Length: 79
Image 1 (cartoon, rainbow, N blue to C red):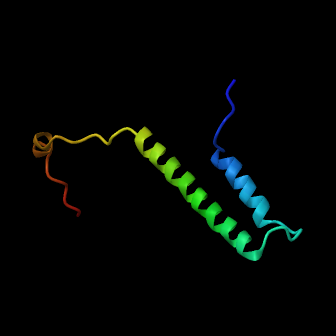
Image 2 (image 1 turned 30 degrees about the horizontal axis):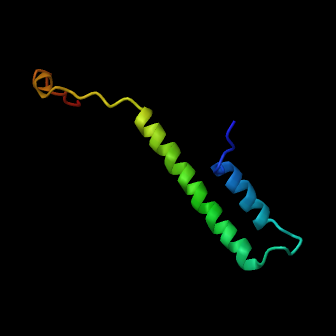
C-alpha cells in the first residue's frame, strides 16, 4: 500500500500545538507565535469547510407561488 504524502489538518494542528506548548526551549518565541498563527488559520479553514458542508446539505427553502398568495384573505384587524 502506498504511503500518505500529506498530513491531515488534525495532524498538522497536533504538531503546531506541540511547537506552541514547547517548554524545552527547542523553539524560539517567534516559532511559537508562528505556530499559533498557522493553527488559527487551520482552525478557520476547518470552520469554513464545516459551514460549507452544512449549507450544501440543507434543503433549499420552499418558494411560495405569488398567485397562491393573492387568493389568501387579508389579515384580521386587531380589536
